[in-house]
Image (tube, rainbow, N blue to C red; front, side):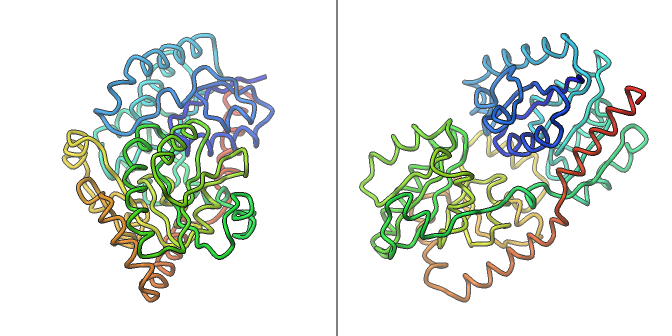
Length: 382
């Protein structure tokens, strides 16, 4: 049985990777895993929860753990694998690709770093150490045009179009959480990393205290992944708000259900904003990191927006509240603009539909699985 090592560093990557594992059960899977990958049967060398961070300064407390995880990953490569697949997470995965190449291991980069936004200096290193680059953005082929003689480039479309699904009605969600039927749900999505939740959730909850005075019909709902569930519950215990936590023990894909059935949401910058765009209900993007991390990021980034929906649209479809603007007062006031203005609300819904359409066709994960299967068979002589 051929052995594939797969490395992810974020919950979104865990989501994509778990689907690949299910589509290719004929292989033995091992790697840096998230909860969904483990459920799909992937053996764990290290957990992504131990290495996932946002920002340069935020990574410092986890430096030793990240270093330990990398060492374990390299040791697993040395024990012998037939293929290394890495998913985004460039700080860790670019070095892992390099180690794999030194050992003659074939490599696939699925969902490459957004070098078109920042880090163009990484392109030669990616090309040197990657055999197949599997892209989810149609414009990325042009980014790598000078390196197509070094690697094989495949565009498959965005996997979220296949993954983002809801199964419950608003009434069913309210029943699960014992929320009165007459209440309107309002989503708080502070992210899936501890550092994000610690920074963003207190701001959201304070904004909730302002919102509830103007809109007493609201009931706030927070989806929680297992790694931050306790932290979220600890944070909300300090506030006297009508707020409930929806967990994976209660329902599959709680974040999608919250996005779908909330009249409005506040969402941490990242993949969740694209998921919310596919679902289609209006929201605000929030982002706050250390001043040093933000300053360095601004120096490196060459695009006008942080949020993926805005980058795709080429304009501000959703409001971005960054750093100093990411305050309870701003979050509340911007949210009220949508809740009090039906024209703005409907205009935003239409623009989010345009973002979804720009992502292409469904079937990205099946295409990716077929590419991996065919490649493994070709290099083994079958």
